[in-house]
Amino acid sequence: MVIERFVDPYTKEPLERDERGNLFRMDGDGRVVYANRDGCNDFVHPDTDLAKERGFYDDKYSGIESERLTLHSISRPWVDSIYPHTRFLLESLGDLTGKKILLLGNGSSFKEFYLLSLGASIIYSDLSIEVVARMRSKFKRADFAGTWDDSIEFHAIDALHLPFPDGTFDIIYGWGFVHHMEDLDQFLTEVKRCLKENGRCRFVDDAYSPLWQFMKRTVLRPVQILFHRKYGVSPEDQRATMRGGYRYEEIVGLKERYGFRDIIFIRKSFFMRIFWRAYSKVFGGDRRSMGRVKPIIRLLNSLDGFLERTAWMRNNSIFLVWGFDT
Ligand SMILES: C[S@@+](CC[C@H](N)C(=O)[O-])C[C@H]1O[C@@H](n2cnc3c(N)ncnc32)[C@H](O)[C@@H]1O
Image (cartoon, rainbow, N blue to C red):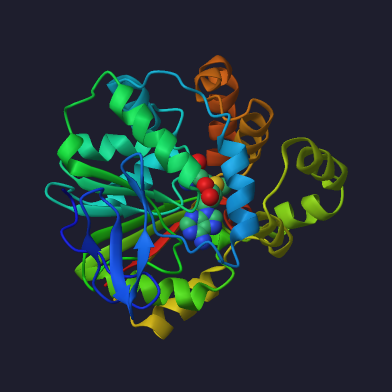
């Protein structure tokens, strides 16, 4: 068991567990219940404002691949030289031995299982109950099944309402997900509350790139409309696309406002990032097929590396690792 105690995500009152694994609290004569579905507790209130967003992702994830995971497939995104970006993120997480990590909005991404092999324990979560239940069963069928079973739990969680007591985690992590948060105030208040002293939060999103924003509004607009029609876009993602990524000043402002100690803001890559996004959209996130385009990725990595010598291009790099230390 990774977490001993849960709290009601909305009222923060302690929850108890029944014999079926449901979590509940008494409310007058009745009970408020966070049901256990296939080993995952669903902490998202059915009347949430996020019902549309959740519905979109429940549908999207109902067709995720059922390939058998191996140690190779979960470690490759962190160690293969064609993905230099992940290295920054991994290094910035520090030594993971004995660390408790909360993965938020983790969708169908399995590379984070690798963090277990580095000694961490994990709460794997997403807004969609569909995807966490599927990822749990994928984990149980992996060729490393049984190795880290006591170090991971899977739950459906709305990142704006975390069901954990104060100071529970060493690390809170989200890849491609914070830009979905319309209410950054509430989100970071929850993140700060649930982090231990000397904790870290680390996120991967897009940085604001004037060039990329200009391209999206002009030459790439028809392609964007076509992609959104064909592959769909969630309501939150649509808002974030129009707004553009995060700026350094904005992140500094958040650090001051929430009293975090240190700030991380690392941006990289323009052409590689655009290619990666387009390719994974068209091929439906089939990460294996990335192997087939390795030479193109290498070329684009080199091009980005060369161009990033100029301040102008550095200010247009899109891939962003950001976060704070408490
Ligand atoms: C673009 S996907 C990224 C998924 C995954 N991190 C990855 O890298 O493939 C965004 C994810 O955020 C989740 N999400 C959206 N709003 C959320 C919220 N309020 N709380 C938790 N997860 C949320 C969605 O269900 C979706 O899985």
